[in-house]
Amino acid sequence: MVESALLSAMGAALFLASNFIPVAGAFLTLLCPAPLVILGLRHSPRNAVLGMVVASLVSFLFLGLQGGLFFFLGFGILGVGLGMLARTRERAVEILFYGIIVSLVSKLALVAVMVKLTGVNPFSFGDQAQIEAMLDKVFDFYARHGMGSAAMEETKRQLLAAFGQLPDLFPALITMASAVDSYLSYSVSRWVAGKVSMAELPPLPAFSQWRFPRSVLWAFLLSVVVSMVAGPKGQGVFHQASLNLRILIQMLFFIQGLAVAWFFMLRRGLSRGVRYLLAALLVLMPLLSGLTVMAGLLDLWWDFRGRFGGEDR
Picture 1 (cartoon, rainbow, N blue to C red):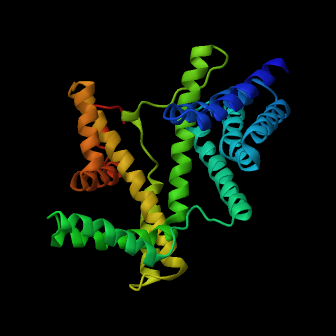
Picture 2: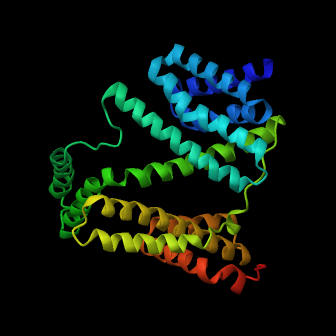
């Protein structure tokens, strides 16, 4: 009980510090789930849940109802859930997969509660006319300083179209956020657990070995079929489902393509700095990003690392 109380207090303290300390608070946010992961891993589900509730109440006392709910739904459930999963699962990939589901459910609950309490949807981007007026001011500033061009107008048009689509992309955006959140929480928690020697979490595979199942290709074909059913007008439930599914699958292709590139950079013996620079270019340059997506798609089918990299198939 003493250790449960200590871990709960550490989780609440990190969360409070992340709200009150500028700049460093962003880093402390990554550490918030770590004590709760250790709590869920080392103690019974009853004690872990009780500790999470106590930490949420402490957050509520200092930050109010919204702060307490944000800790409970944003960090508590995910942290304790990852720890409990680590008690029953031996493979890190399984823990991470189910952790993404836990994170997704908790985030949906958090959005629903915040909308109920404040009446503001965090995924609502305001009136389109207001967004257009804001972009007009920005691009007028560039035009007055001699930077106006046809390319800038095209950029403005693309931004307006992107803002208009963002509400439709809510399922894909919150799923990707849940995946990133789960991965960071697990990685940081594993590092912290190793430092304090209180628990041990199984390691994730090296990034160069990351690969997704071939069933992702069938999901890609499904998105194409759904897009055809939706028709060319781009409206309705089928269009939204196709759009979100396609974005998620393209992200999986991109991650796998990046893993392929990382594998071959390691095989070539490139230094860490060069590898990170090339990876940044693959992420930031649209043409290279598109080629990375294509490489990931093809690797799912042909297994470049097994065929050309000397890796065991």
